[in-house]
Image (cartoon, rainbow, N blue to C red):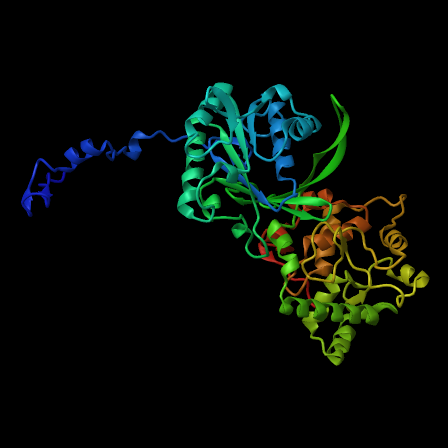
Length: 509
């Protein structure tokens, strides 16, 4: 052990030891002192989940998004599943209680009808309220943090709740929402309640304006994000909502973002039926919240790049409209038109042109997607825009980053429905191909110079042969031999074939 050092005091005789003003004496005077617990005295424990791989038990958690994106509806959906023991995690199979404090929504007209629509056991969901006595009269007040930490913790403990929602947290705070110290005081108080009770303390925040890094979009101080263990970001993507876990993500790769939609349903009330929204889960999403919120804030440079891609896409369709051409012929035509070989290849992938060989060692040929010939025989291309994948926001511009939620091919103009049928029709008598074999062949024929393809293109092509998204993903993850590797997560991810441990490029198609 190190020798005991003498305490030097500067309050009395400078430079001399002094027992009267030692740190121990000072600590007793102030009522505060530091303590040490050695790591060897702390027993390790495993992480336990309220919601499997997403929300740890006994921690604060946050939901953030622009107004009207379904944040409250979704957390009510989670609460309903908890109340029935249907939420995957530590309490799966055992119904659990939750508490809600809401400063914005009426309980009788909004929250209870929504909980009914979500299928909640109303006896397992409690209204959290803070009361104060004023002139012998009990009045309900908004909770204030950290002032009301103790009564909130007591309510959580006595009720046995495993989750408590504060919506919105801004109504519970004093001070400046943009000042880190003020925010930390409130959120740290919630963290203490969570740790002491073992419950998840969840709160709701709004997004700031504009685009940018999704992690920085929660309005107010960044401490709202820094002080919690899990953060979920919400953004509308047409008629669905995308949720991305921005912090504390323990989900398997490819499941970082998921989607749901809100559907209207009728609920009976004492005053008659009323329409409310409920959540319908749509599964994982390859589009992230970050990508969605930045769509409307592309720069002039981004728009110029999009226009350039559209030009080469239109050129390639025109070149191939009369039938297949050898790839070298296409490259020569591209050079003459002022486009590079790589630009021609990328355009091929975007317009979903097919590369194939008529014989095993014959030249590579390019052709427009199946159905394009039939379409051109009945519809004049001068009257309609080129076929491009659609989203709920309308026809895309040919951007390389097409989302996985693309609908069947469609066209601008009055004949959209007709064109959709022509491009998506498939004989019901023809069985779908083996998914793994089809996927390997499709990637080999459609990869870029390094063999990479976009999953969204594979999903779109798969639909034309009767394979849905789940079948293609399962083929990639389970059955593909040789295996298929992924690059990155979310909308920018790519797939390619790996042979003998070495990625296989697609060749000079």
